[in-house]
Length: 137
Image (cartoon, rainbow, N blue to C red):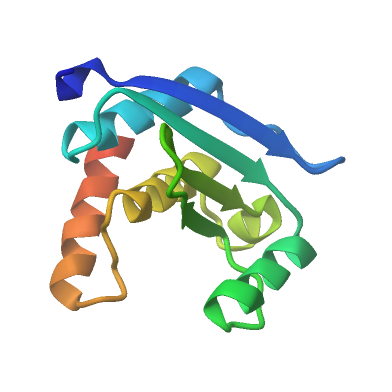
């Protein structure tokens, strides 16, 4: 299957009382755009979780050793046809004056193997990709 033939199987989980993520078609469009430059093909499963400040703080502590909330975390899943999970905290997104679609793309790029914390060069590459994909919205 060609890379431009990626089918996105997107699911969302939202904690009670939290806002809905951006329109599904925007999320799917961002996934397809990001995957065009990766080696991923076929059906891609991705879960978007909208969670609270307390929940993302616990995940950040558990998986990164950082005892503080963050705007987005990405978890690569090793299961067939399941690309990963992106966890977003709208409270932190709002505090940082960001948009959910921006942090979604940021988390998606992490799942594609980009890492702004590895080096300044990698940070610039990731930032350029974020900007490129966000221009589509």
